[in-house]
Length: 236
Image 1: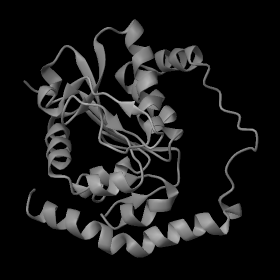
Image 2 (image 1 turned 90 degrees about the vertical axis):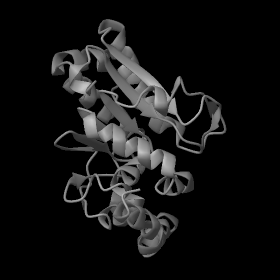
Image 3 (image 1 turned 120 degrees about the vertical axis):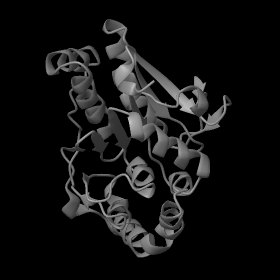
Image 4 (image 1 turned 30 degrees about the vertical axis):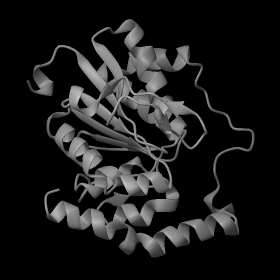
């Protein structure tokens, strides 16, 4: 059965070892709150196996269902992370799930460097996209056009920038699943009104360690993307 034919709108959140936990739980909280008033929306955390998986925050997360149990969700969200996310770009099980689910999903979303996993299987070639600023060159090496925005939409794809931007993307996804008025009520119920103590980000004031991090990722882009690109060419 195709995603369009389903009455229930299953929203799958893809779990893999080592991801950034807030990339997962930020938008998951938004969609879970939406589901309280819209029972046709069903958020679920999916993984290769039903077993606890480590995250970068030192806590473990347990999937609700396996990839095999939710092969064609209405929408799915891919969180990001650091080295584990780069490894996931070449993981055959994750690649197969993302590619297969994307064929029928109405919405495909990512948070932070999760966009690299989408790009690694060829989904973002020629598209407008965003990700964490540190890995923009890696994203561009897959043929995507990087936009420094909190979230970017291109067709059925919604991608958000680093970590906290996943909440913004989650609210935009909520609007696509229902309407703007409903998404605004979800935002109000979560009391989401960000006013950081040090104001908005000023990329011009980025210190040397952060600049070095971005430069390292940019220099390593050809090496980091070589295997995923080869797998895509082999349709794997």
